[in-house]
Length: 257
Image (cartoon, one colour):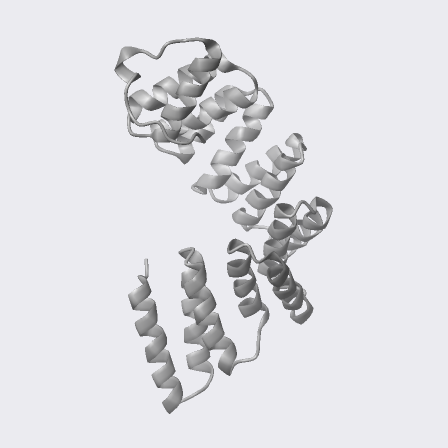
């Protein structure tokens, strides 16, 4: 991962190079920095890199999409939407802009608009597992579980190591009542304790508190320091009126999840 000091140094070098030889290579370097910052979720650093890029180059579909993602993740939704829409006007076939705008619409509860852009992104890039995952999660959030399962299965077929798709697929299987397959997906996505905690969350969401208790207990025994599993276990134990076993009765309790 690029540290902030490294980014500042790189941008400074870009600025110095620009004073000597402005042009496309420098612009591409700045855009590459922005891509790296987005990949590492360094939103403010990405915005800094994109400011430098836009100071010397005309906005492109890619640069606007990158800036929109950073703004979206910082909660500045109106400006993010404007960037995504402008990117699409510049290049209607830029799949990342459609995919990013779809996620923003989903976050804002505009699911019908989001679905249109999810579908367009997938038309343009049908082998992109992340797009299938995002579409599947949107379908899951709307209660369209059969369609969500189809999309999420497609995501893991394309990219078997995409952990967030495995996790989402696990929750979709659980909603369908197939906790065996749910557990398999959680196991493929996370370390054992995290996987047991996710299984507990899935059971609890289904109103199955006894197996949720067992899953949370297994998670805490696998990793006594996993605070959310410990908190989830304590909550379910209180609801069930159960005392915690002595081996897990003490330890830090932080917010559940």
